[in-house]
Each structure stands twice: as structure tokens, then as C-alpha cells.
Length: 87
Image (cartoon, rainbow, N blue to C red; front, side, top):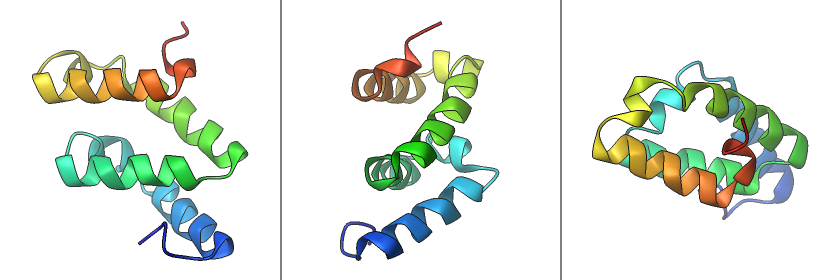
């Protein structure tokens, strides 16, 4: 859905996703994770930075350090966005 829209509409969709209180929780859902990763891919640089800052704080939580899916997602995000690995 995101990739099939004009840039202005993409940004609007990404902004709506980023305003959701639970978008970080959504990363732990296989389908939701895809949506958040696509949102990050198509976000403007400033919005992506804001979203990554929120995600970075949450990646320290136990739910991302335990369980195979949480660790896999954290690892994939860190490879794509190296800023998530910085301490």
C-alpha cells in the first residue's frame, strides 16, 4: 500500500503509523513488522530519525532480547539502520 502511492500520500501514511502509540509493539507481529519496516523505508529522513529514536529506546526491553522473533527483528533493524547499534 505504501509503495504504490505518490510521495505525498506515502508520507501521510507513514506519519499516521508513527503517531500510533503501539507501532513499536507492532514490530513483534510478523505482519505488523513488515508494515513498520516499509514505513521506515518510505519515511522522510526527519520522520525516520524520530521513529528510529523511539525504536532504539525500546530495543533494550526484554521482549526484544528474549525470544527468537524479537532478537531476529532487532538484528535485522540494526543491520538496516546502524544507528540502532550505537550506545
